[in-house]
Each structure stands twice: as C-alpha cells, then as structure tokens.
Image (cartoon, rainbow, N blue to C red; front, side, top):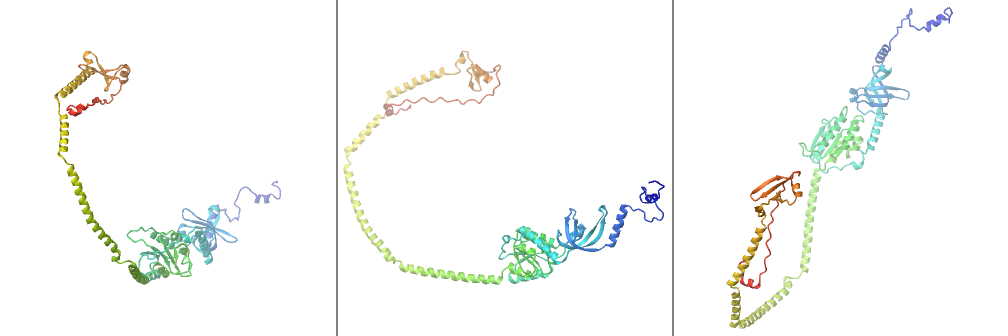
Length: 500
C-alpha cells in the first residue's frame, strides 16, 4: 500500500510495530506481576470470609501436614488448601466423596493464574454427609474383619481390677463406681480422657493402648477388663468414638473390653469392635461384675447341697454295708474248718515226732555196729604209706641239681655268644640310628645321622648326601620269654621238688 493511499493512516494506527504514547491515553501498561497483585488484593478484599458447600475431590495430605483438595458441585470446581495448623484441628478424617462446608478466604495463585480457597475450618454438611462418612468407614473396617464375631472374647467372671477410659469430671465415672460398689466392690483404674472435641479420639486410643501395654506384676495392677464409656449426646458429640484410630485401638486391645458409649439408641463403631456392647455406662458396670450378695447366696446354697450330698452318700453307704454284713457268714462259721484242721495237725505232729525219733535211733545203731577197730587200723596204715612216699631222698636231689647246673651252663654259653658288644672287642663297630640298628647303606642314607658304637665309646657321624631325619623315640626293649617248663614226672611230684 502506498503512503499516499487514503487508507494508510487507518492501517498505521492499528498495526504499527512500535508502541508509542498517545495524547489523552490514561491507561499505562501493567506488568503481569502487577496485574496479578491487583487481582490478589481485589479478590482477598472482596472475599475475605466465605463459606462454601461442596464435595471433596482429589484429596491429598502432603508430607508437611498440609491438605490439598478440590470442592465441587454439579457445575463448578474450586481448588482448596488447608494449612497444617488448621488441619490438626479437623474433627473428622477428610476423604474423597464427603460433602462439607468449608470456611475460609479466597486468594489467587499467581504462578498459575488460578484462584483458590484457603480453608480455616471444615465441617460436614449436615447429618446426611456425616452418616455417609460413617457408613463408608464402617464398610472399610468390616472388610478388614475388625467386627467379626469370632474375634470376640468372653468377659472374665470376676475381674480383680477394671480399667475405665472416660472423662474424670462427668457423671459417667460416678455412675460406674456407684454401681460397682453396690454389686461387687472392685479395684478401678481410671484413665482420664476427653470424650468429645479436638484431640478426644487420640486420647481415647492412647488410653486403650496404654491399658493393653501394662505389664503383669508392675507397680499398678494390670486390668482384667476395660470399659470405654461416655454419656449420651448427638452424633457429633459421639463422633470421636467413630474415628478409625479409636476403633483400631479397641480391636487390637489384648484385654477384654466393653464399649458403653451413649444411650441405648446410640451406636458407634467402637461398639462393633469391642468384645461386648453395653447400652449405658451403668449397664457396663452390671456386665462387668456379678452381684456379691448373689454370689454369697449361691455359695451358701452350694455348701448346703454339698453337705446334703455328703450326708446322703454316707447314709447310702451305711445301708449297703449293713446289707452286706447280713449276707456275710459269722466268724464261728468261717473259722470252724480251720479249727478242725488245726486239731488234726496237732495230733499228727506228735505221732510224727515219735516215728522220727525211732528212725533216728535205728540209724544210729546201724552206724555204731559198722565202726570196727580193724577198719580204723587199715585206714591209718594207708595214710602212713602215703607219708613215706612224700619224704625227700638225697639221690633224687643230687640228680635234679646236676640237671639244673647243665641247663644253666648252656644258657651262659648262649648268652656270651649272643652278646652284641662282643664283636666290638675284635675291632668291629655297630651302626645305630635313633635306637635302630642300621644293616645296609639304604637305611643309613635314609637316617642321615648315625651313631657308631666302638668297644671304648660312641661317635656320631653324618651320611653324605642324605636328608636330615629326626631321631625316633627309642624302641621298647623286649624281654625274652621264659623257656617252657619241662613236665615233671610222677616221681618228682611224689618227692615234691623244691626247685620247681
């Protein structure tokens, strides 16, 4: 387009490349940060306090403790954030799908050109939302088996110590103590807690776990039974006993536990997890212990029944004994045969002694007739002959001594000929190694170090080219066995050789 064209000015005013200040222009350009700051102040000034009702979506708890979420309805959605301090005061466990009313202020997030609500307080939007949250948590815990009947334990019949988790200032603890005193006085350990409001759920859970962790035999007696109690109230007042932390603590308690929260028509998740549910705290005290008067009456009745049973058993035993006694024979009847047999044996004993004495006299007479002097003299003669044969004769002793001397001479000559030192007198030498005799060059090289024995001493010598060898332990000197003894003749036996 030519500069002289009539449309050139119009084109130049709307499509120029460089920005220029024009006369009458009162809107100076703003930076993005300045515009974001203006928007932030405007939004925070206009919406410094708002209450929004919506459904939680995209809920997330950061590691820092801050909560990030979205609030939505059918047509719109807004981001929200709840800082750590406000989140700690939250009375319920926030999660997706819960309808709430959030109170806070609107602000902008310049980094993404978004606006969001900073939540200071968040509450459930009506009882319907609270019940929906309760049913959702109930289904979750039931799915984990925390409410199963097979987990329920029987209560102890007569607990020595009862632990109570409740407020120390309310009427509940007074009702429990009064009822226990009326029925059966029992030791009570009170763990004081808040029963509603901020931090109540954490305190109740800590108390239940504290009773469960108490050791047996400690400074305080470990409870045999635990009662978690609270008076009646609205569902909001009882909500602490619906918290997941309390329900899990009750389910994990190692001591049988009674849940007595609210009135008879009130039901909490704590009731489902406990081993027994009581409609009221007073009813929990009645369930915990029996009536002492009834126990004493029952003991008296049992004592009377036991006494009657003993008396009845003794009477029946006496009757049976009398009946058996009538059927048994008399002592005279039982002893009559034995008495008769005793008389017979007495008579037979006297007769037997007389016959025995007569037999002994006959045997003595026969033995006395056999003893004659001739027999005795013959026995004495044979004994003298044996004695004469046993006398020592000089000729036999001389012969035995000559034989022994000849044998000794032979042994002496043999000993001299076998003496290993005798060849040394003729110039020979004996080669030894560690107590062993060396007979050839192979053994000498294997020994390495040898000892040469001469007639006048010993000399150690080393064998050339042989490896050194440690001296073995000296061998045990064997003792020559004794030559077998020559069998003795009958004559030597008779003479009783003194050299044998």
